[in-house]
Length: 320
Image (cartoon, rainbow, N blue to C red):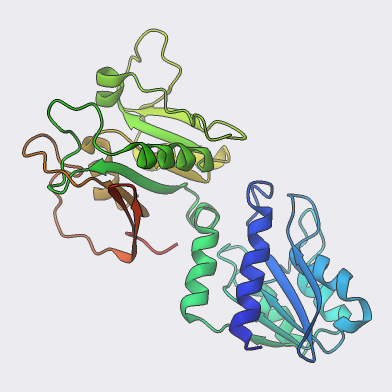
């Protein structure tokens, strides 16, 4: 089986840890010797063994001379667990194929360096699998490298880019609206601007999707908040507030509401991902999902998905 297929399997295994590894990334590993899988593993929970160590334990003596396929560079530092690079060297693994390097600036490729220094062959295939590995841990990568949350701007829009339809409460259909609640459930925090707070008094909760926890709910801008509001007021400079939120463990932030806040984030280079639910309607009037910008935006890795009568368009403004 080609290297790419083993890495795809490792990416699939990594997803089994989704939701239980924070603040750590999700990681999967496959140990292969003579074309046969001798061990598999994934990082199940923060503080528990890393994916590489689980795969080595499953492989036992068969790890000697084997190849490890892993979704993220093996660590070389002592944290809550010993270094995975040392465990691989001690087990006699001959080759490590990693989808992507560790984004933590404090490690800076030290895992690969330690492996190579011990005579272990290290390869990074790059290409589409590298992108998939980056996207799999997109929030963690931005949080650990830039010390701010990964920011997603979500909007429901018409074909002419408006966020309202005269005479209608909703822009998009029920399936799209359910997906928004699923998206909220995956985020650490959800935010709107004060204009949206005053106009709609939104709850910003993830409802009817079996959310294991609710995101923090924020209002950016100048207060005061309306009486009885359960939102947190965030009224400082964006860079400072995002750094504070990151320090409090917020790895991902979803922007909702009107275009004023989103335009400020985009203009400051603080939006990483764009999620647009596009309805087959032409509004003809009303605010657009973004205000005027000084220069055009280039979107990358754009994809589209049909959702009932609507289309979900996802694209990246910045590569994680």
